[in-house]
Amino acid sequence: MPAIPYLKYENAAAALDWLGTTFGFTEDKRYAHEDGTVFHAEMSTPLGDPVYLAGPGGEYRNPRNSGAVNAMVSVDVADADALHERVTGAGGEVAFPPTNTPQGMRVFKVVDVEGHEWFFNQRLDGSA
Image 1 (cartoon, rainbow, N blue to C red):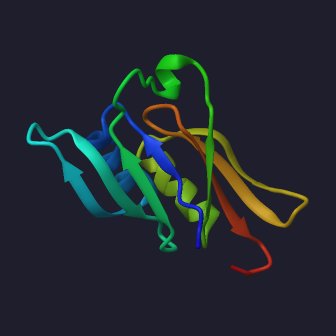
Image 2: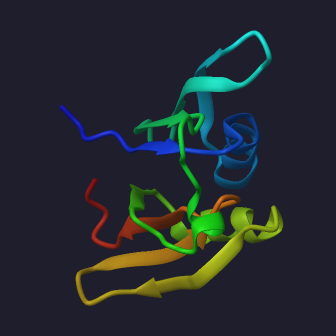
């Protein structure tokens, strides 16, 4: 079974839209309270990997507002440069551009609308 990132957002509905527009994620499910507040949602990355989102509840503060990042999400992609172009075209905050690593990956980092850090990795040997 895969490990599935489950991120909390102060505005999960806006995050769903942003992740779809900026990263090309597909929204699969959205569950909301009567007032429209999202309490659970599921998305898929372009390679079909799942990502879950939820509204915050309780005393949650997102990384941007708290000043502390407590998790990072790493996503494999088929073409890091093409996704980087999409992200920059959508106004995404790129922390560092696509870079080749000694481990045979092409990687770049994006900070999302609420401060979560995302790493996008392309395997240069063509393996999945």
